[in-house]
Amino acid sequence: MPESETTQPSRLARLTQLIKGWRPSTEASDPMRLGRWVVLVLAIYGSVVTGLGLYWSQTPDGFDTNQTAVHYAAAVEQDVVTGSVTVSTLREVIRTLLEKPGGYLLNDLFPPGVWLDNMPHWEYGALVQCRDLARALREVLSRSQSQSKEDVDLTLAEPRINFQSDSWILPASESEYRDASRFLEAYRSRLALTGETSAQFYARADNLNHWLGMIEKRLGSLSQRLSASVGQRRLNTDLAGDSAAAQSTQAPEEIIVRTPWREIDDVFYESRGAAWALTQFLKAAEVDFSEVLAKKNATVSLRQIIRELEAAQAPVWSPIILNGSGFGLWANHSLVMASYISRANAATIDLRELLSQG
Image 1 (cartoon, one colour):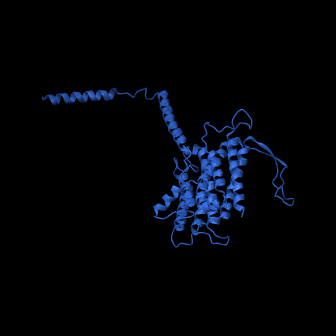
Image 2 (cartoon, helix red, strand yellow):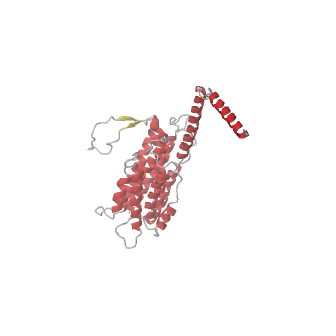
Image 3 (cartoon, rainbow, N blue to C red):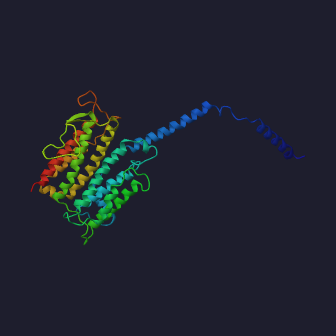
């Protein structure tokens, strides 16, 4: 018999013995070993999620408003005209909210975005300033008089940017904000079209004053909310200065105002987001309203507002937002932020007075 025929059965026999002799390893079914694998997987997942969370929580850098306007205009082979810098800056801030690391997080439903707290409030602060500027564009900056017709693209952009900020689907907030950006680009493009008169941007002192009035109210509110981190007893001055004034319901003469401790860091990061967006918008306004500001000798006043807002965005080296008492041992980051916001608000009031003068 050939050698190959004798070796083949022997190999088959050995393989059969190996299969019969195999038994599942008791070590593989050991609950302790399974537990160690579960812990390892959870540790890896936690590390990845934590790393992504830290990366996504980084505040975006500012940008050159002039270069941004040039970029948007060059993309459609147009020139930069009055109003281009302001509208382009608004578009760029919206783009930053949507395309920064992690994207738009305020409406996230899945980790790690749903676990993040600081960046979503930062986004909301910036978003509120975008909404105010979009409203100013629609109501004032694009109209020569109160009886003037509203711009068609701005009437479509403004309600979309005011869409619910935490909608995840049907429609998602991001899709509405992208639509708003497209309508803003249509308005910006029409501004630069030769012979196109239906789209205008009126860089006048009264228009700038109107928008600054909106900023003043926002900064005043943020300053009060930040100051309330330590709790304050305040006299009720709601009706002060008008003996005939009335309000819907009676309020006590003295009230205690205090931000809940769980909301202290929320207000802090909302203020930082508002300061970041306002910094970009005011730099754009310095360009588009340059002649108005120069005539009123108010350019330096606008730059002072920008300087205070930039100081409010200094890096926070503490891993948490501290909330010490006003004159206690520990720092109070909210009170420091309130100081910068209040000074920016005071500078805004001064600038409005300059613009109101003949």
